[in-house]
Image 1: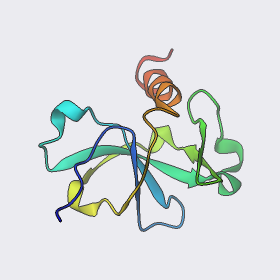
Image 2 (image 1 turned 60 degrees about the vertical axis):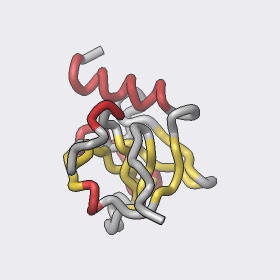
Image 3 (image 1 turned 135 degrees about the horizontal axis):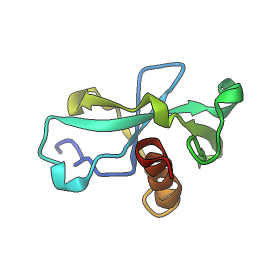
Image 4 (image 1 turned 90 degrees about the vertical axis):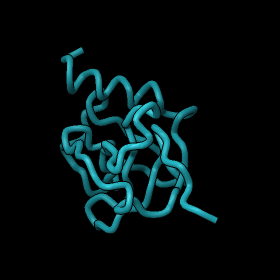
Length: 107
């Protein structure tokens, strides 16, 4: 069985204590590229004053709270993405999209 296709709003494991999860925010139209645009998800307990609800919303995954570190957006090779954890398309699509709009457009 091959690697699962990547999709926007999917969450993947990442080898980092500061941000153990990554949220894929790249359009599915660009799925054939070798890289994906991702936003780190940091454990809420470690974020402190960084939590800004509109720019950095709180996201719950498997009973644990994370903060979407929108200002730390980056591109990574698909091969660096860890195991699939969850899809946030139905549960947090609006919050994630609003955070990205606020980052890029200021509203």
